[in-house]
Image 1 (cartoon, helix red, strand yellow):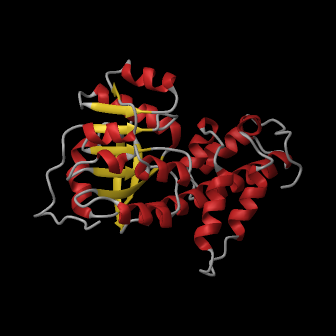
Image 2: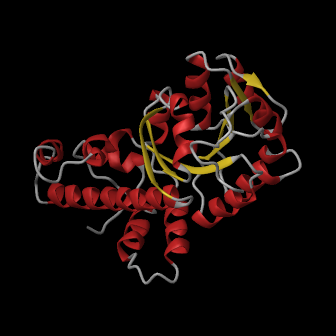
Length: 289
């Protein structure tokens, strides 16, 4: 695929599409359709499709149908293999995409997978990796952050379609850079949760009032969104996030010992334990601090 330049890139076809209507893709489709943008969707789950069409989206039979109807195609599936199938299969996006189409890979995927799919795109079709941070709560609120890798002109072409479901968009470099950015974000995220939980548990065991300690930390250099919002989070995907980081770090010599410490901790610590701890109670799931 030869990426178009600002002067030669074909016009973006109208409309947006979402492939994969789970916890992240479903809200994205609803925000797009709810603001009057023609939105086409597909998912293997008919219930998810029905929910999206109830908010004004139009159903397509397959990813090719989404691409035939939408200039911006957002793909939010679970695995790299599903991503390949959604784009490259007989009824995939590439089979229906028109010149000027921009495909956002908004799944958590390896940079190598994103580069492979970008290289396989038809002429005139741009594939960007557009990793999302913010989680389900921000997807529901239409306030996701996009970390984007790929052609800057293609990103500029779709920017008018991003405000209904994003709060910030960062262009980080070539295809794959968005996934690198998300992995960096995720490593900080899981390490923060582990560090905060262990520190507050130590404070509790030493007789401290955890709610008061947490409030004090929010007025200190240790303040963070994780500290403020931990009670609202869903502690999912840490296994995949750290496995992806390991694959990406292979051969680089990078030290991921902190990530593995966080992984071991998160396997013993869930949101119920977090809620007990933040209330000043015995978390009940771990004994080491």
